[in-house]
Amino acid sequence: MRAEKRIGTSRNPLSSDAEQTQAVLSAMDDDPNGTRGPRHIKESLGHKGIHISRYVVMQDYAPEGFHQRAPGTKVIHRTPLISNGPNDEWSMDGHDKLAKAGFEIYGIRDKYSGKYLHYVVLPSNRYAAVIGVVLLKCIKKYGVIPVQGSTDRGSEVRDAFSIHSILRQHFAPDLVEELIPSWNFLVSYRNITVERSWRPVFEKWGVNILTFYNTGLYSGDFKRDDELHKQTAAWIWYPLVQRELDIFCLEQNCHRVRKQNEKLLPSGGSADDFYSYPEKYGGEQCGIEVDMRVIDQLLDEAVEGKQHMCYVDEDFEQLAIAAHVAIGFPAITLHSAWSVFRHMIAHLSQ
Image (spheres, rainbow, N blue to C red):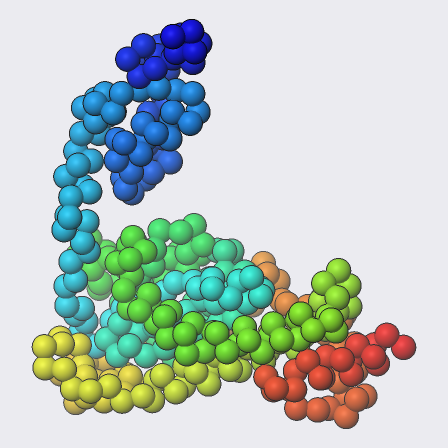
């Protein structure tokens, strides 16, 4: 009995109603998806010395949670994707499963064709200025902007959104923003076109990159705290990983998918076919042509974004090039990268 008085119980709590309310609300703030029921919250608070009855948690705070957690109510119901043609909508997102190795990815994928338009390896995909540059380079690559862009609601899309909105307003003034928004801000799991690409990117490509990279990283040749080692590894690996990603995207774009009669988007061909010859599949080219001189000017002015995309110092870049030439300009592949690293380190350390 004395212990109960000292620590309190759910029937005779030591905390006031206001303190209980704040504790429950704080616990609910930690669960934005509403996956924790009253028992979980009660037990979690109990570990912190705050004892509230499960009935109080259940009845007084978010009683609708039971319906939200009921089987079937949280299922994300799929709806068929629709699009008028290539460049009607570009879907964009970042991928972080290689981030621990230092390789973050940002991708732009066409909704109609499923074509991997522009996938880039970056030191960080969190800077708005960087994503703006990624979009500009994709526009320059294809010569058009899409009717719409689609991303999640992350702050890193700020510059890309602004760039696209201004370009569309200037080069397609007949498109009414209220009727056809220039940008779709979606919750992450609704940004389906690009989200669906991340699983094959990681499982068919990324895991192999990590295997080759980690083999040398943990072999004893690489010293994590040595700046020369870090810059040399970055100089070798960033372009290599980008080349391998380009090859993967090329293969995916050439891959022929089976005919699916129930699918509203094209099937029975490759993404390259759907993108280049949409009329064969009931689509039409939707891209908005833009003046490349404007894009070039915007890229020239995007100093901050390009700086954040650099993986080595400018001065070291020249040293690394000279060292690579000095050791015989060996080919850099996934199999040879760490061997080249060892030879370059030996030369640069002289």
